[in-house]
Image (cartoon, rainbow, N blue to C red; front, side):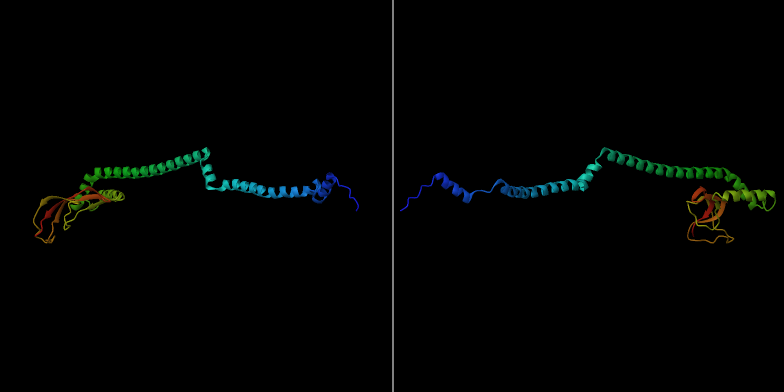
Length: 216
């Protein structure tokens, strides 16, 4: 029986180490690199997502609201509102001035016409009596009445009209004419015009002064 030389414990450990030895540094490097690459992927993706989110915030309503609150934007809005208010005030002022100017012109024309009413009464009376049938004064009277007619002056009042207190001033009540010039009616009627009335448009300058007959 052959004696087997005892194997030192150290040698036996070396043999075991050869069988289960860990990979060398060069061999482990690729694995470590793979681990780093695998861990870096989600991290870079997260950074890209955050960058995308921060960029998208510029177009969100909150970003627009921040832009609206900028002092320059607020000041521009205030100045625009001031200009719009001034423009509206100017339009209203111009409309009011035009209206007042028209009223002043109308009142001025009415004042002149009212001052000429006695002259028109004399012309009307002279024409009724046949004094202005012909001649230069007739032409002057016609021209004066025609000129005043351009300002809307109109003479009114005639026998047979229904009495209207807005248009007529009743100076006397009388019986119905016996000559049949005015037929009796069931309402108060003008039977004689004592002084004609004048109006300019819808404005009554002077009511017609008349004699009326009561209804039968």
